[in-house]
Amino acid sequence: TDQPLFYIALVAIIVGSQLFLTGFVAELVTRNAPERNQYLIEKEIN
Image (cartoon, rainbow, N blue to C red; front, side):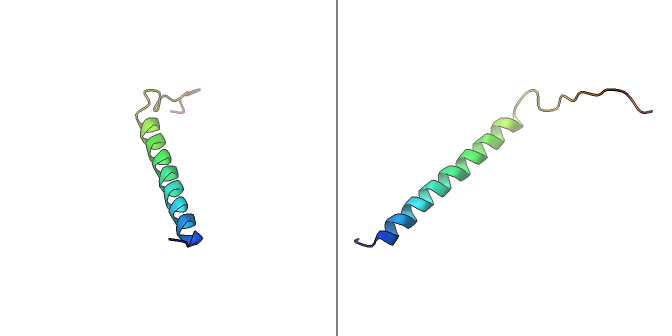
């Protein structure tokens, strides 16, 4: 096709899906991190 809007939309779809997949994989990596639930507690209240 000779319409530039088609190519702009195609690039936007590809970039958007790459950004989504990057965020999704980063979320999976941080959820499986071994130091995820280590908290520094200064003192006990009760």
